[in-house]
Image 1: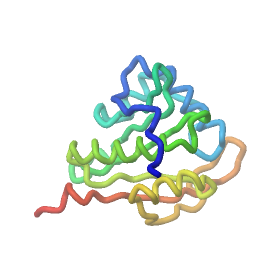
Image 2: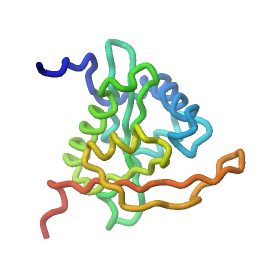
Image 3: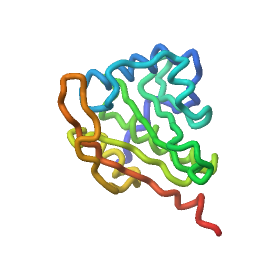
Length: 172
């Protein structure tokens, strides 16, 4: 028996999606294990911090279930194909394949844009995100110990994952 068809579609993120994207981001922040951020930024700040391409959402009708976007890791031209990936899934949609569909879609979109390395920082406690990234071809490359301090004074480690393209960046 084949798995059920997804009940959502992946499409480009549009500025009008921001309220729902922010809501999903805030749900992730509220878990305490998704990001060092303590509040969602304004649309203007979020927009300025992410590539204009490779911004995707998962939607079911008019309801957004998750989003993904890429941020540059450096202004240096040698790192033009290296980006940080973020993927967030609404609490109501977790465990339904939304994260995997988004991550697979952003991998494909990034390769079309000539990006050769996706990086992700994941808290060690975020076992769902760790498993998702590993299922989608990311490998653990290191651990940054006590790299960020939370507002409550607690230090957090960050696991560094990366996925190297099998398509982009292989030539000389």
